[in-house]
Length: 173
Image (cartoon, rainbow, N blue to C red; front, side):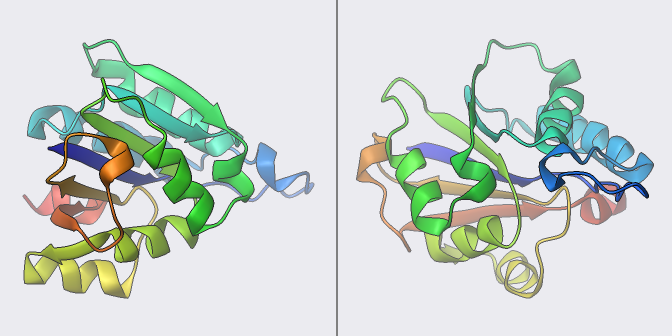
């Protein structure tokens, strides 16, 4: 089995002076949410051994804040394809993960991460599936499990949505 964590970057800021979208950083709420989600991931055991992260500033900052209390060694890879690519590019990156990895995180952007989560999740708890189908908020985390031993064997629609966590749902727990 392999576990995939699809993590949307935290709430970003819109600078008044403009600038490239790629350089946008997190808003104060995003900083708080990224740290909270990282703590939740640690307490719930949803920790990756491999991370594929978009090259944008807001995704890098989300990752730094989320993993500040994680203990384990993580193989982190940055990808421009996670900034500008579509669902197929994301899917290809996942299928190319090393066989030694059993839990991987994609930290990227909407709407692509939302579309990917919907395409990969064939089953799941009705509450999580319904919430996922409606919206993928900033700092949202979809936990999808595949009953395969290698990433190259995953197929669209074969994943089990184990959980769909957001800052709002973890604060209600």
